[in-house]
Length: 232
Image (cartoon, rainbow, N blue to C red; front, side, top):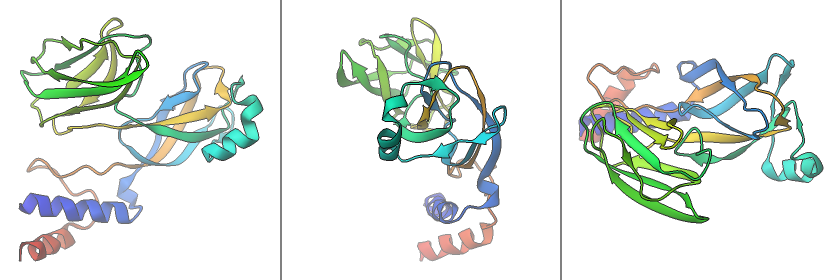
């Protein structure tokens, strides 16, 4: 219960301010040629700056309605991306390259259950799998898009989600992660080459799990007092 109180207050304080300790500077992300969508690292909570140093510009965050209203006639044009809009959050960092079965496996002998939500044959479906340690377990259905993935409990090892036919990693879940989310953005213009972008962002909140975990922002004494108050 004490850990629950600590994490509840820790998360509230983490989200209340833009702490300098919560910032990640200049993480490299790379666009894909002729792909308007870019999936960001799962550690991203909020985009602060997205820049293209090679072309000397900062990409402008743009509301999707404004993007469509002002740039509809060029929405599919290829070139240098100058702006972006948010395009949802997904449980994977990449989508299947074609309709394919999805595999899950762990780095250790885990047996947790795992659920996948996605599109198959144009319909949204869900499928439940059970981990079999380091042996890959495949879905019955073939998916064209993955919406979410989740496991029912923490695991000892890291769980990998991958496309069966291409053996491409779509997502990874650390032992303490039951769900993951990757922010997806839509770029305009559509990149005509694989461009290197630099991302500065606020990191997602990570709860205290292990005894060795540390509080990243300078609020440890306050957390102790708040947890004590919650216990009363």
